[in-house]
Structure formats: C-alpha cells, structure tokens
Length: 422
Ligand SMILES: [Zn+2]
Image 1: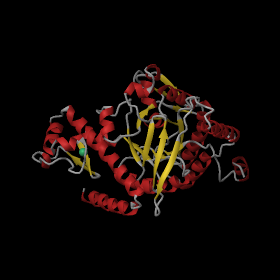
Image 2 (image 1 turned 60 degrees about the vertical axis):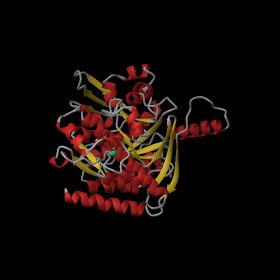
Image 3 (image 1 turned 90 degrees about the vertical axis):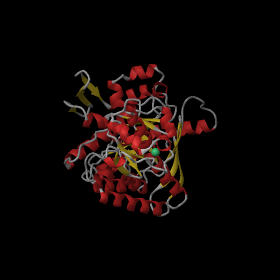
Image 4 (image 1 turned 120 degrees about the vertical axis):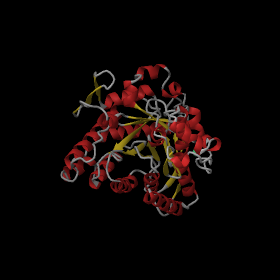
C-alpha cells in the first residue's frame, strides 16, 4: 500500500502523512537513477555528483557502523565529529588548525550567514569553500533551528517564518524556498531541509503540528532545489514522542534523500529521553545513507548514538568550552582556572597528538586563561576539537576491528565514573 492509501485507511494513526509527493518523489528518484546510469557509462559529464555512503563495517552486536561518505569535496570517514563554523569560521581556528585536528567536514550556518555578510557576498567570492578557505566538505544548516531558538518576534505559518533581524531590526522572511536558495548561493556540499524545531517541553499537539509542517516544507525544499552538486538531507522531528518519531522517519524515507538527520534533540530534554529517541530513530533510517545527529557532541551521547547507528555529529561545545577556559580531556571537562593547574607542568593530555599538547604545559595554559590572553582560546580550541574528532576516530577504528562493544563498555564506565566524581 502506498502512503496515500495508508493515510486514507488509517487517518488517525498517520495524521501527518503527506499525500502529494508520491509523483514528484518517484520522478526525482527515477531521474537520479537515470543520471547515475548515464554517468556510469560516461554519457553525463557535467557537474552532477553522486553522493554515496559506503558501509565498510557493521558491528555484529550493535547498530554501530564505520563508513565512507563521498562528496564533491572529498570523503568523510564515519563516525565523525564535525566542527561548527557558524559564521564561516570555527571560532579562533584556521583551516590549517582544522586539518591538523583531523576535521573532514565542517559546518556553517544559513541563518547567521544570511544576516551577515549575506549570501550574495559569499556567492560572489565563489562560494563558501573559497570564501572561508576550506577545501574539504561543508554542510550548511538550514537556519530552522536558529530561527526557532534565537530570534524574537517570530510569526510561524505554513508559508514560513517571519522574524526580526537581531542586527538591524528589519523583518526577515525565511521559507523552505528561501532557505534552499540561500544554501545554493552559499554552495556547501550538504544542505539541510528547512524544518520546524519545537522546543522542549512541547505538547504532543505542538509536536504533531511541527512534524507535519517539517514534512510539507521538505516537499517544498525538494521542489525548490536546483543544484545537482549538493545533497539535501531531511530532518526527522517528533520531539520525545517515540511514535511520532517513527511516523516522521518512515514518512520521510519515501523522499529517498541522500541523507537523513535526527533533529529536535539536545534542546533541553533529559539525556535519557534523548538516548531513547536516538536509539529508536537511527535504525529506522536507511542503512545505505548517512545518518546525522544534530547538535550533539559530548562523549557519552556520541558513544550511545554511534551504537544506535549514527554517523555524523556536530556541536559548538569544543570551541565554546575553550572560550570559557575549559579543556575536554579524555571526555572530562577541566577548568584551567583551577588552582591545581597553576604549577602543573605536564601537557594537557600526554596521549593527545595536537599542537597544544605537544608544545605547552597545563601551567602555561592556566596562565593564559587567567590573563584572558586570546591565545588561550585558540590553543584550547585546537585541543578540544582534536579530542572530539579523535574520539569518533577511535570509535570508528573499534568498529572496523569488530571490538566496538568492549570499546563502548570501557568508555561508558570511564565517563560514568568521571561524572560521579564531579
Ligand atoms: Zn591535545
């Protein structure tokens, strides 16, 4: 039975199944397959790029997998943490720092770049890769999350969202079409669908409404998308309601997108609720497509999500903590202002290969933090970003070697002990 039939026969169970995308989805899917076919035989030599996810190893005891996600600007070895460069820069770090930290794909943000400097300025520079000097893969968030979490005076309707610019007070409209157009101007490899990201807590009715809108907006994003060298990921919503997550995810699969994200998590809900939702949702997403958990970047949450089959993560936490004088060492947060570090001449983490750990002592970093020297933020960001990427690389290695369960158990124990001693 197709989705239309499903909705007709089970209207109560499937309240937000969209009914009008079947034909378009079929056409999109068919045209993709045709282009892939012709490309394989050298008939299409234009800039059409196939985004491909290859699962290299599947853990025998969990949903964890190691994979390779191919994009026009290179491949991403998963699981992988992606540093966040909101305004086309990962705060205090240069592209060289990012490369040395092991970064493969970095994020930039549609909402923030639209406000400043404006997508036309980025497009005139030749797109984000040239503008920010990062030649690797880039992903842009659609701005949905920021509109709903940051902007004031917003009006939401099925058409889109109108909000007041925090820069000059002007009213700005963001719709699925506009979000796609901006992201096409920015030119990232992966672009995200414009979604409604409800806060926590939210009523079941509000979540149903947000999920329904997210699906309708996804349809409009697909229709608006013109560039073939960008992969559009859909974002599964559904709050902390398992049945709504299942329904949103299964409905979204019919769009046959090149990747899927789990959104609306890490918005204030308890960690246990997030874990439950991720464990439930990730395995529903297609095994041959990348799965991206949005806004999550702590060791324990990433570890559990990797076990559930998630491939990609992003979070501002490593650079934000650095700006507060904090380092993440083996998954534990250290405040370098603490007196214990003033005369501690050991490296931050003797096992870490980053420039900061190879070159400086905890005492020196503590001094820079206390003196509020700008170098402190760069050095701590170098380490924190390296730490999170290394953690996902270690998980990947454990999956490749079929020893992920013992890796996960060891880290789970270590992280739980550390939080108990906090
Ligand atoms: Zn380090």
